[in-house]
Amino acid sequence: MVRKNFLEDLDLIKKVAYLASTGNKNKATSGQLGVNPTAVTRLLKRARKLGFLADSPALLIDGVERRRIENELYGNNNVLKQLREKFPAGRLSDLVVIDDQKNREEVFNIIARYLLSEVLPAVRFIGLAWGPTVRGVVLAVSRLMGQNYTPREKYDGCEIVQTCGDPRTAVRQPELRSSSLVALLNASLTNTIHGRHTFNVSASIPKKFDEEQLATIQKYISNTVGYSEVFKQLGTRNALRKSRLKIALHTLVTSCGSGQPGNDSWIKDCAIEQKIQPKQLAALVSGNIGGIWLPKDGLDKGGLNELDEINNRWTGMNIEDLRNINRSSQSGGVVCIALESFKFDVVMELLTKGLVSRLILGESLMKSLSAALGTVPDTA
Image 1 (cartoon, rainbow, N blue to C red):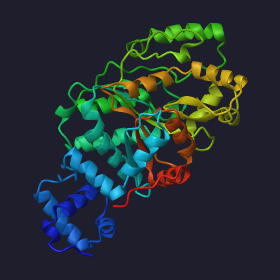
Image 2: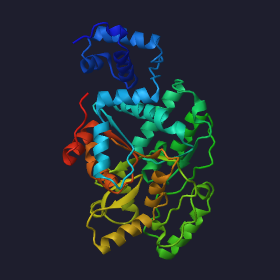
Image 3: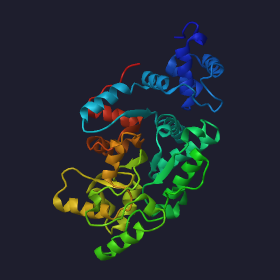
Image 4: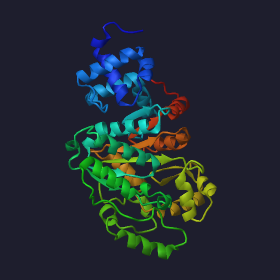
């Protein structure tokens, strides 16, 4: 039903502005709000005149109002509250659910706007992981900042930090190199192409190097330019249990992997490096976050030792580093993006172990999570 005097209904105008800023087309907005498409066009004009939208369109409504509108439209607060109750050991502070039927560019634009408005202005040291999802978000940030979405002054002092090396895939797809993504995000936020916190090393040390050689390679990597600025000395066999980051990151932007052949590219690359079959590695893990393998529940001692050995050859940050980011009083926390429904198991593991602070989920995955946990979204 069309509301009376809708051009003077500020709440409706703000909702139209919000939906436009997320990439919604007029027809979709019309269906969601019960306003005919012609009226939506007039409401958008009104939103621009009132200063709620820039030409991009970029949302110019402040953060508190924006969060209220998001909750009324998407109903995430009730689910967030229930997730906190079900996973009391965690530090989940925010939940963003995105319509995964939108095209990928629109989805990445929504995530980029969220980071630019809610996370990045409040932090200094920003860790950046790898992969196609992270790349899509970084490219979206670059596009938005190129359109003057928000003043660069908001990000004065931000330093982007590489948190892992490069997988075999990056040889064939250089645009996935971690250092390239760090450089692009740094340039987008600060207009500076130079950064102290990048390096070029392999994501993991291959199994073909024995224990003695492993120690020598770790020592060499620890002293390379860039890497030595980010990480402490790699050392003992038990290094996995120690935080190795030198820099106290305030936030980390990462994705996660299912740990299953066919939809997790890292499992294939890692298996090749470690001289095992992907299905053998898959049997040990519940998934990965930023490339760090999480053990499957119920693994026996032999399986845990095998996975420890694989993770010990990983040259990036570790699980304790993730926990430290979530503990930081200045923290934007670990921001984990999981858009695909096949990442259900790894998201459950991350919640159970308290390894994420902000979750950005695809709608289909959120529905599966809600059904499994008995959580109920708010009704707007």
